[in-house]
Amino acid sequence: MMANLTSEMLLPPNSVRSLQMYPFARRTMEEKVQVKELGPDKPDLVISQQTKEKSKVYKRSFCRSWFERKSWLTGCGVANALFCFPCLLFKSDKCDLTWTQSGQTDLKHLSERIKKHERSSLHMENCVKLAVLGKISIAAQLDDGHRVAVRRHNEEVDKNRHILSKLIDCIKFCGAFELALRGHDERDSSENPGIFRGLVDLMASIDRDLNDHLESRAVNTVYEHKADLLTCCETIRNSAEFDGPTKREAGGYVRMLEDDAFCFFLALFHQIMPHVDMLYNQLQKRNIDSVYISEIIQRFIESMQAIREAVPSLAEGQEDRRPEHEPPTKKRRTLGQDRQHHLATEVCDTIMCHAKERFSFTKHLVSATLLQGDLFPQHSQTFPDSALDTTVEAYPSLDKARLKTELSMIYGNEEFRSCSGALALYQVLMENNLQDTFTETVSLLSILITTPMTTSESERCFSTLKRIKTFLRNAMGQDRLNALAMLSIEKKLTRDIPDFNTRVIEKFATQKDRRAKFLYK
Image 1: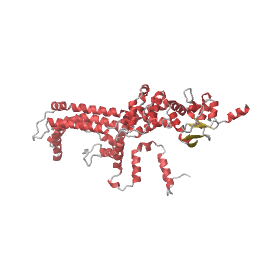
Image 2: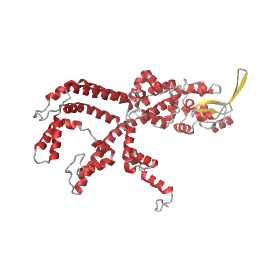
Image 3: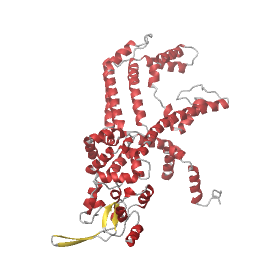
Image 4: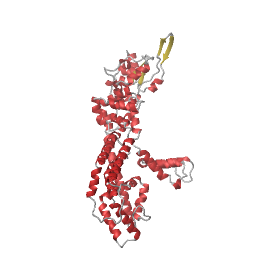
């Protein structure tokens, strides 16, 4: 009796024999955490099986590589059998007894039974329980999604404050050195636009956010101040205080602002450009939410369709708002109302056609709805089979049956319902080592978070390349070009690393012997 008790006490706490005699549910939290840290017991098993098929005799032996391929597998050296470690810890009446009590010894059908067990929702649930043991709950981890949304808002505020801060710095510089803010000629084509404008342009050339801010649309400004611009240009044209070239340019602007075709298309694009700017801003975000892209494109197309249908009334409105000026001395050729309507309709059709073509592949957007946290309660009641079919059609490498089982388990678990997006769910699964349990879900998440929803990222890279590899630096090598492009594209990352400069100095100092001293003794 004492010998048996002594042998039981000598058993490792994570062994199958110890867990069967002293169930995991009866252990203290410290003992549970210790078992989790030890992981599955992997003893040397002597399992052999001899089978006969078509007058041939086959002998199979257990290979330890199964422990490496399946991290949840554990073995019992006494029973010479295989068990499921998570199910053995959190076993219930619904668990398969062959994985928790008697053990698996059938090597012929082992692969098939492992796949079947992995697809069971009970096994996935036990793996989740083991992963979060001793940690904060998954729901608490997914609450970080709210902080992500706050961070996005604060990033936009930081961007606006950054732009304003740069302009303030330019004003402070001019004030400190007693320099004039306004120049003689501040037009874009001017060679001497003034010190303040030159400072702003210099900062914009090295600051992407400020450059994007300055490259704003001029259509709305011209449309809203057309009457003031016309009055100003007429005053310059008729005044004797200005030189000849200035008066001729002002006269050209007057003729343009009085032209029927120009006014018509100015009014047309005044209605179009706000929708384009809104769509552009939504698609240019680095942390873009793929779930709502389809709705954004649909709203944009509907807006363009409404503008297209309102083209006739747009021309009538322009007739009513036309200013009463003296008729021009020269007769100008006009397009005609029918031609204007035709061109305006063609403009709207072209915009809608390009929007549809560039976003014609929307299956990845449908796939994103499978992992939208606020839809999990609805999906738990009625599984989204149509979205699953579309996802498997778009990505045939996914196992439909197993993906459905994994998603059903996620939908039914209340801890996952606070998920704020694909990236948050992916991070939680990876941090808790659940990638082997939710293999198909992780594969789908990897596709969704790495597939660009728009071309803004690649366009941003080309814009960076244009600024770095200029005509005067055309002989730059590939390594240097890659390094400079990475510094430009990932400037926020380098800014957020607290010891970035220190790491660079350490690497620079250890590459070879330097004349200057960089290393401490």
